[in-house]
Amino acid sequence: MQFAPFFPVLHPILKTAFPNCLWRGDINQPEIALTFDDGPHPVYTSDLLKVLDQYQIKASFFWLGCWVKNYPQIAKAIYKRGHWICLHGYYHQMFHQMTDEQLKQDLEKTKQEILNICDINPNRLLDVRPPNGVFTPKTLTLLKQWGYRPVMWTVVPEDWVRPGVNLVTNRVIQQTTNGSIIVLHDGNDGGQDVAACAKEIIPKLLEKGYKFVTIDQLWQQKLSRLTDGIKTRN
Image (cartoon, helix red, strand yellow):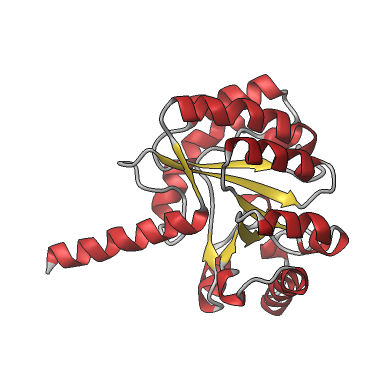
């Protein structure tokens, strides 16, 4: 059973229940974030980078530590292009299935693999998306305690079950609005079609007037809105 039809319904409910996660950007700005989970992959990610280069798009990549270790050159290529780097766990193990210490070590190990390869400031490795988008309130509390920023999604076309490039593209185009965070996959599940999907999705969204930004830019916008709100109340 495919769950894609239910994600647009779940999104506003979860966004309201867990406001400390980043679920979307500013609904008043035509800016969106294109994100990729489960990589880097030696073939799928390489093909995807060609598409992002073609349209000069900066995306955000949620990496698995084990793939970073196995494919350091691909990781370097992504980082050197200026894409935003985020964490997705080491082996894609569900966060709530680990003990607190296991989860902490899992994320630290993933960070270390990235630091071993990329000349990146450790303080920039802040963003975490739980595998399969599954979390508990306790998970979010721990991430905050450890200084991480939990990132979720707005548009999930369920590309990992490979429903076809046309269907994935149509879901993204139909569901994307101001501030959307789009999730695609460049790993073993769904990565086979990721470059083809991106090649269809990006120009269509550009034609609609959207600007692609990184997850970090969305966080900065959120902080700015919160600061402005405090100033207004005062």
